[in-house]
Amino acid sequence: MTVPTHASPDLERLAFQVSPAPQLITGHRRMLDCNEAFARLFGYTREELRGHLTLLLYPSQADYQSIGERSEHWLRNGLGAFYSDERFMQHRNGEVFWARAQGFTLTAEDPFKLMIWHFERLDRQPAPAVQLTPRERQISSHIVNGLTCKEVARQLGISHRTVEVHRARLMKKLQAKNSAELVSRIIFIS
Figure 1 (tube, rainbow, N blue to C red):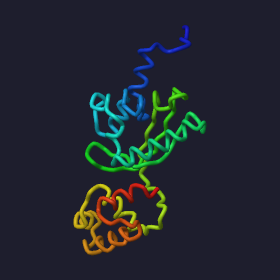
Figure 2 (figure 1 turned 180 degrees about the horizontal axis):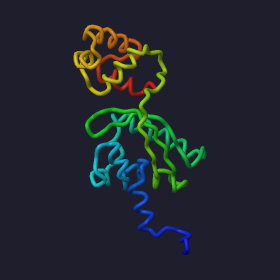
Figure 3 (figure 1 turned 90 degrees about the vertical axis):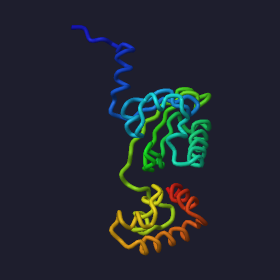
Figure 4 (figure 1 turned 45 degrees about the vertical axis):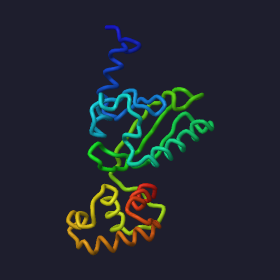
């Protein structure tokens, strides 16, 4: 029996589609294609993702912009064709989760022209740049998912007043003036 030296394009395509590793192909930050594992990770079908900007998967425009600037700087300044970070991403149902993203450009002269990405959902929370107590970290993960103090209290089995006290401390530590700013600052403390 002869073993083929390369796989046929159909076989390569099938391998990409059924790979257990969530993978995405982008062109100028627009989703050209993804495999089934990637679509499941974010709660969409492949067809729903194709053609959209990756902005669809970020919790905020600010995250999309800052991560884009950071990764483009890395790739354009000769720091490598490979970029990796940990960041918040957003599921179709609105849940914000922590993920590791690894991207490789196939077009070094124009890094975003064609890239392939691998994403992995992480169960752990990032180490914050400011010192948060374990309870503040726990409460902050619920806040970024849009829960009110009473809803957080019910989920954690504690008093809503306790949640309010911790939320006030988070506002002070993160120097947030309102709820939207608090969510944004929680997202950026990585």
